[in-house]
Image 1 (cartoon, rainbow, N blue to C red):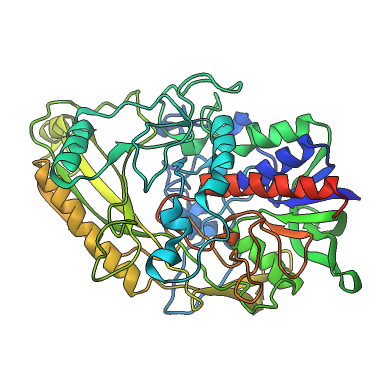
Image 2 (cartoon, rainbow, N blue to C red):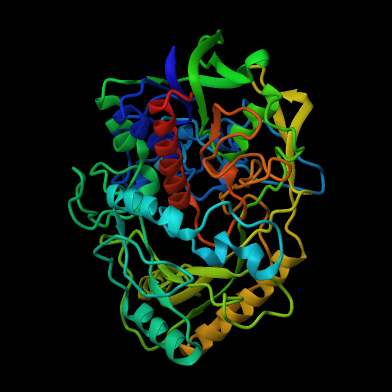
Length: 545
């Protein structure tokens, strides 16, 4: 009998295992995939060593959905799920791309590492514009846990004093290019916008036993120096070091076991991914950190936590796709195939519908931008032979802004169990219903126009604009489906990620988000998990679990 069973070893599962085991609890950490070794990392492998030059027929056959992710390539495709073994369904007119990994650490091995705090503009958005629900806590309640997460993870960035994007505990920021500095100055002088270097979970100086980033570039292929944050070599490593955490890889969670007369979870039933044997593990508390859709799938298959009828409802994924690109002609820097390659970009902070600002007539909430400016090879150059090669190497000085917009929590965006579809382990699969609504479309149209305006003020030429929204799922920021709230009739979990219906089950990943904001969510997920774990530890101390 374990004190706690944590399902999932990624960003939040690693934190839960670390926090609980370091507090003296005995923890079982279940991971659906295998362990991963630094020997598999290929960040320094040149492309010519790839057998198929990243056009492997195996990837096309087994991972047609996963290949939509920029990080899934011949270098690392076996970290991603096999789509044939892990199916899901959607309505024909509502495509959704679900990109996921099943290895120890999950998507922390390939994530974009952008790490931003939310503010009360986000946590109290309902009070601002009347849509949806406020979160059951305020920024001041989560701020100390943001501090804990940032100081451990190592977030490099620069303080800006912008209320819409609270400053944090930063390591030294990475440097902007000359074009980015120019864009920062123009954005502030012409529009009053704040543009900053990306706040990124990569250490810029030696930190917590990890070496400073050496700017080799392709972080999604692993990092021998562990400069970017991934849970296997940080939180999970620390949890195992306590001697009170047992890692169980290849454990595909099927459902939570439940003692109906006592209204409590008793453990988790899982399938061994290699032997196909069904096994059960017992615990006093069950913590689901499998990723928003997977955690909710487990609960739906358990037939637990849905007295409100809202389990699975309110699926969100940031709306992306809109933005602008262009060229700056007055820069003579040339691209290089060798390092350094800064593994980061720039961030332009939300400026629409601020707390004390004007309301946009077409949409609520807002968007921020990620982007960059710098020299790049011009593979679209004209010509042939030596002339073409010379033009490619001469390159262009590109400048770009791509928007990430808030996805509104709507009950008609939801997941449910598909009664006719199972994965290769016999576990019922998901049917996913999601579309971007009129508000998201209006966000993208405005974001495209505003991005073009900034680039043009910077003097960019050949400006190209895209105002359309990408397919839902492409942000890879699935959130909601077990939203937080004070009222059990209008939410699934409380402020401590605890199910209203079953008090010893917790949802400590993105499933508990009440709204999506427009910032990358992983840092907030980690802070919420640390806060919830500290509450659970206190309950154990008082013998309330």
